[in-house]
Image (tube, rainbow over all chains, first blue to last red; front, side):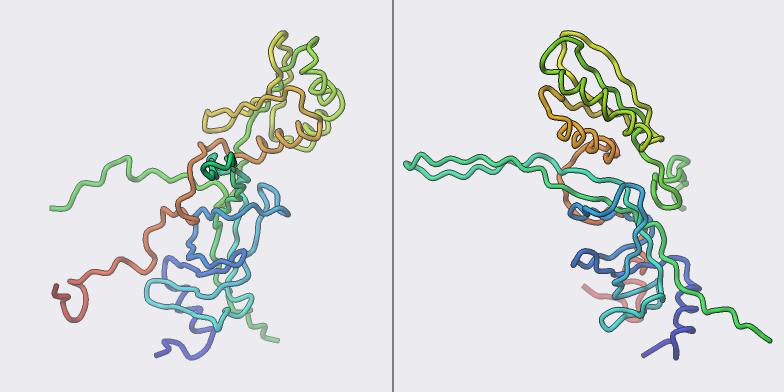
Length: 134
Length: 140
């Protein structure tokens, strides 16, 4: 049962609550994110450390008592989710040994996976435009 | 009788990037030898590229240090009092640039195996379910 009749009242109900979460698709994967979380992704090649990214594909915006769910995405400009690129790193060294017995085949692979870390800076719910009275 | 609130639990958790972003690298120290062959390409890099690099990264202090009869290294020092050291013996200038960029992009945090993609210290937004606080008390 819908708690609100239209988008504006739904957003005002959500805004009345103190904390929010979003379910957003980032690089093809869905994550449940709140403000202040650190999200580790495969290395993003076209961003620099310190850049701000907007997460566009939001499936769900929720608070303690209310949830706004999209089909499959909630309309754009409803919520503004900003993330800051805080780091480009590599993971711990992983060693993979491939071996076949009696064939003289032994292969050692050393891998350090490259990652990018994002900090979810803000989840801002859109406000309706201020009515201008002539 | 409620538990007393401990003073240490009221401190603010680190959250770089939430309101503002502060780059975590503060200093890059290049150490090279004046005579040895292994440092020749590092010397070339220092003559040609380091000034441009320093201009592009005004938040970092660049230090060039002569250390004879030792291998050339670059050391990045970070805000968490840790440092990362990379050896540059016989590396070509593009490879040296790659290693320097690795230090500039890092936060100095220790490298650990990745367990979950999202690391969160926020309490659950929807609250934690309790069997005593529902209409019909949950019976095991």
